[in-house]
Image 1: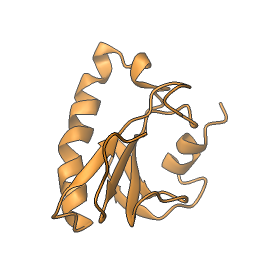
Image 2: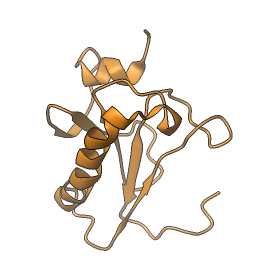
Image 3: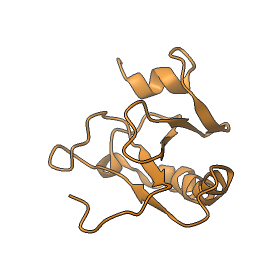
Image 4: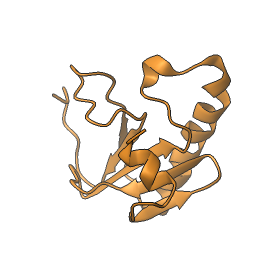
Length: 112
């Protein structure tokens, strides 16, 4: 499997890590869309939200619980946006489930 996010999770490709534990890693995006833009990914390869299995629910719950801690360490006290692009129409360019955490600027709506 040639998954760039798996390679980052396995430390085969360097990244600017914002948070890591045994289940997930969070790193700064190379093409940030906000002053703070990090990606939170599971270390387990899951292609998209459509591929989440019942066995993955604890992992995703863990990730969602950690996002507020990650946001606090990134000093996103005025708010932040969490986005997961799912599939081609949503512009999912890497086929590994990931959550964008964006902050330090006013977000607009609708997003795109």
